Figure 1 (cartoon, protein in one colour):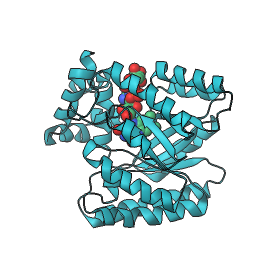
Figure 2 (cartoon, helix red, strand yellow):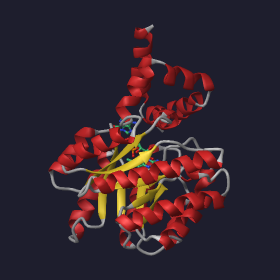
Figure 3 (cartoon, rainbow, N blue to C red):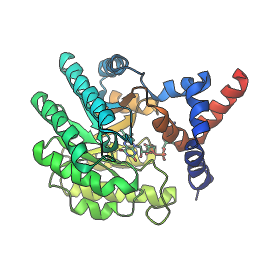
Figure 4 (cartoon, rainbow, N blue to C red):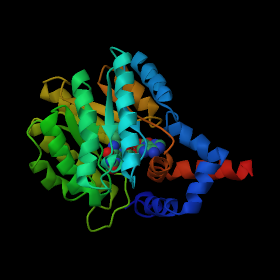
Length: 310
Ligand code: FDA
């Protein structure tokens, strides 16, 4: 088991939950500088600018208006309005292949299931009218069941809605069996701090689960977004899909804004479908902490800048 996966990642995620961590990161220039590597900016215009640049480099995109775990209906309605604005901007951009990605807890899942659905439905209707693809992010394990319920309702309303599934969760293998036939799936490793009983704890197990899930989803005919920067897994998928000889209409590579740009350009340059997830907005702290925890070197970079600034 690697020290980074087993010790540093959980430690960073735990420390990040303290209010003083949030204050240090969001209130200092080094904190905002690190954030700017992973977040396109605070406004929709910033995100659309990045989407335009990617498009010129033959990379498609997906917008994520940052925010999660909202506590009031008002906050959830604001998120809904932001997504409607994003859809309108994508439509104005014409010819831009740009999807959107939703977090159920940003749209009111902690208020109630019904409140969340009431916010998701108008977004789906607007996306459907424009033919824009919609993905539903998967959050921490306590939200998996209600998120799958939201997804089933959403998919019945608009079949171009897909769901993220996490290979670190032991339950995902079972969840796959209950998906609507042919629905789009974004396969990720998983980014949250979870109790060891429910997850695979070593990188080897998480990677093996990712490869198994890909095989199952591919055999069952699902369109799959292979959302990882792991060169070994990417290469495995590339070989499998090439060997299957049915082309790349059903599989695309997805990566995060600011992570492994070299791989993004290399795959796009070789003609493989690549989509980049573009987070934007002011509520970037929880998103940033997950990116820092994935790669402790990011934390050292932040801390050394902080010390220098002091
Ligand atoms: P891994 O962590 O093993 O990293 C592989 C390599 O990628 C590293 O060696 C390093 O080179 C590079 N790398 C990875 N993360 C980096 C970082 N932060 N900074 C610098 N380099 C980094 N999770 C979730 O729980 N629910 C979700 O809905 C989503 N959605 C989602 C969408 C998309 C498009 C992507 C790409 C990812 C997600 N994730 C997610 C996040 C995912 O679960 C996972 O935490 C990250 O992708 C990092 O894991 P990798 O698969 O890249 O592997």
